[in-house]
Image 1 (cartoon, rainbow, N blue to C red):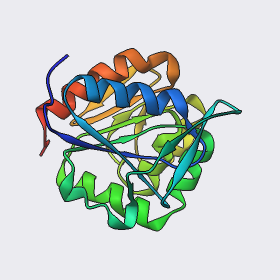
Image 2: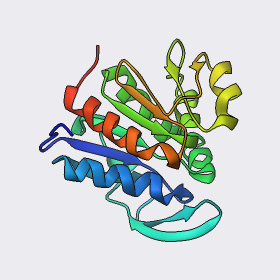
Image 3: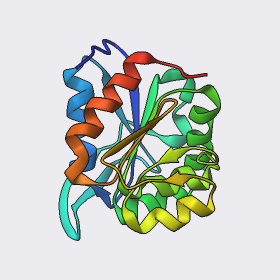
Image 4: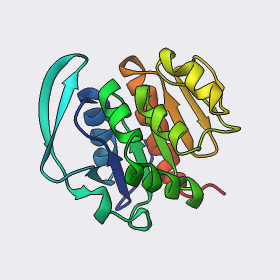
Length: 182
């Protein structure tokens, strides 16, 4: 795995995040030398889930209002049905994501995190994958949807779900190491 020494990576998530889709990429970023930070909609802790069962809590490092995309080298959008829906419904979070897109910074998205990119009008003309139930939403937002383990399109890494985490994490770290994509 390439080194991303010192690169700061924002993980944007809230209550309902799929725990494994937060924890495994977080671990991959840390092991590659990156500095992950949990950015969320409110201060305190968020509750992760293992599908429909309550998981652990995670402490929020920064509230989206206080987080500047300029301070980060990349963005990770974990999945979880509730997480994806809550994040896409928050205008501040959508604006935060859009700023990463506009700056050409690497973005890694898995599962239901694709809803957030659709809301940010960030999938038009891009090829990506997601949890299969998002296929129509992403196509309607202008993406070319494919059912593959991991897809990379000019700095945008996407995967379907937990079964794809090995490939997703490796490709996400690789894109973060490459840096900004014009």
